[in-house]
Image 1: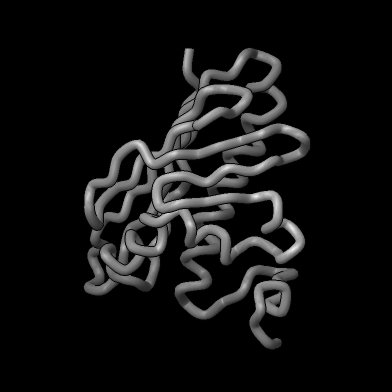
Image 2: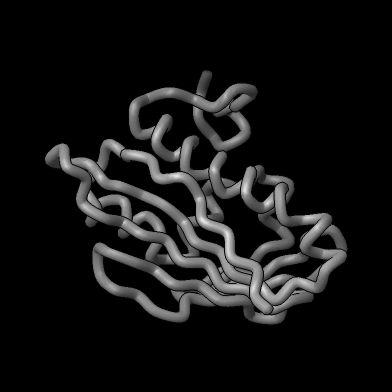
Length: 150
């Protein structure tokens, strides 16, 4: 039975098409990694692959619905999973109602170990994206590690 986790919804101060374009190309994810981590990661338009805590993990785009939704699926991970990102027009013009849905085939032990952490991670990602769109930086964020000056 699949474990399904839905993130909170947040309003991002970007139009759905702008936000969608940031996630549509998997190479864009490399810019968010610290320089010392980039050597272990490879990406092309449709996929990204790397070693995480000793596991070879890959993610591939399964489907793109322009400016509305992107579906990702595992591509050689220790367990099967899928992730969907939703880019819905918000009631306020020029903004996006953004949320993420995650589904995985986790055994009982993995579900107990990862379930709440996955929920927290998805919620934090959505909140951080919404905050960043408003010019707020996450606590402890060091822009210099991404090539930006403080």
